[in-house]
Each structure stands twice: as structure tokens, then as C-alpha cells.
Amino acid sequence: MSGRVLVVEHQADAGLGLMRERLEAAGATVLVTGPEAAVAVPASLEGYDGLIVLGGSMGPTDDADAPWLPRVRDLLSAAVGRGLPTLGVCLGAQLLAVAAGGEVAEMPEGPEIGACRVTFSAAAAGDPLFDGLASTTVPVLQWHWLEIRELPAGARTLAASGACANQAYRLGTAAWGVQFHPEALSATARAWAEEDRQGLSELGLDGAEVVDGAIDVEPELRRTWGDVAQRFAELVLAAAALDQPETAWSSSTPADSGPSRSLEKPSSGSGA
Image (cartoon, rainbow, N blue to C red; front, top):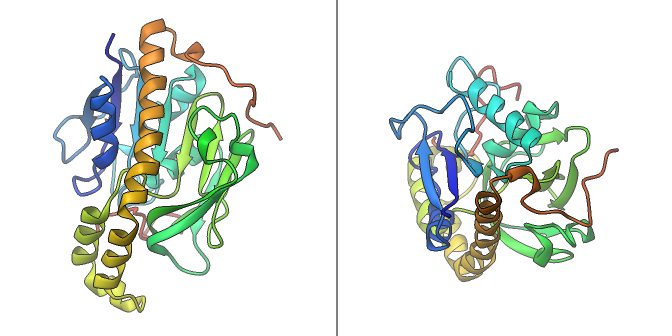
């Protein structure tokens, strides 16, 4: 049975990228919704076996500028409640956190842009999505001005960087948020850099150098995040096969209790 993945794309230049390649190669069916996809974000997860919410230039509470955001937060809440395999990317990770009671704010030391590295902790051991990355430092592509300042109750941090404490986290049994862009490669970095030349210049960054940095690590990006996309696809296919997403897998390490990017450049009403 082919698993159906609902994708919320906030803007066309922040699409599914590498993840789409791996999801479709694994046999999953991808359904992209959002304003520039000209397909309305649905009100329900009925008929879907997984959910991915991508990045965008708005903040997670910029409802006046992006009126579909309340529906996306509702879908994320429902997905967590059902145990549906769910991934929030950059803005998507922030939406997931806010939907569950977390807090998002502007990064006090300024944004993370371009090729960076994040470190996964030992807490990622046994995690269905990030198990292979436990206690390692890996390259990622970043492009964000906001960060998850406070995780929701019960969420567990799995990765961090020097600039951002919550680079990856898990909430409930099958929902993950990542502040970086596992779907993006150097072509995406080039498009974002060209679009935001002035913004990069104001930060003292050279767009060509940002792109070169992404090119240098592209083989590792493709290998690392392609493997993670494959793992997510397997969770979705397992959920579809069982027709019981909430029991598609179990983990021996349960969550603790206790410009056109997000790409999240601060905008009015974002809380940043």
C-alpha cells in the first residue's frame, strides 16, 4: 500500500526538494498543498499517513499575512494526538512547537545562514528517525532568524548548535521538528542568496561564499538527509500498511515529560 504524505508548502521556493526524491523513490505518494501550489490546506488529516510542514518567510503566528497558518497548527496538533508520522522543517518546526504550547522568538545573536553544523546528542539513540546520528556532528543548511526558545512540555531536544539550542526535537511518539533544512541542497542556497543579496550584505555575508559553502558539503548533505528522508518514508509506509498510524512503530526511548525562506526573517506580528 502506498503511503500518502500531506505536504504544506508555504511558498514555492521552499519546496520539498531532496525529501521528495527519497519519499517517491520509496513508494510514497506526495500531495503538496499551500497558496502557491494552488491547493488549499485541508481541514483534516483523513486519508493521510504522514505530514510534512515546510519553511517560509513568515513567523509561526503571522496569521494576518498567512491566513492558512491556524489550519496548519490545527493539523499539527491533530497529527501529534494521532501519532501520525510528522516532520516540521524550520518554520514548520516552529509551528509544531507553538501548536503544542512552546515559544518562538528572534535569535539574540542574529540568524544562522548557509552551511552550518549541528550536534546530535546521545538522546537520539534509538530514535526512529535520527538513531544513526546519535552523538555525531553533521552539516546542515540553515536560513533562519527565529528559533524555538522554549519547547512544548514533553518534547525532547535531539540536536543543537552553538547558536541555537533546539535544532531538532521530538514531540510525542512520531512528530519531529528540525530548525535546519534537510530538504535543501546548494541549488536552493543559490536561489535564496540571489533573492536576498541585500539582506545578506547587511549581515556582512557574501552570497557567493554562502553558496560555495553549501556546495562543499553537498555530498554529505545528500547522504545524511537522504537517509533520514528514507527513514521517514518507511514510517509512513508502515503506518499505511497497518492503517493505524498511531501504532505504526514503537520506541524503547519514549519522549521525556519533563525573502522567501525560513526561513523565518522577522516580520510584524511574528513575536520576534
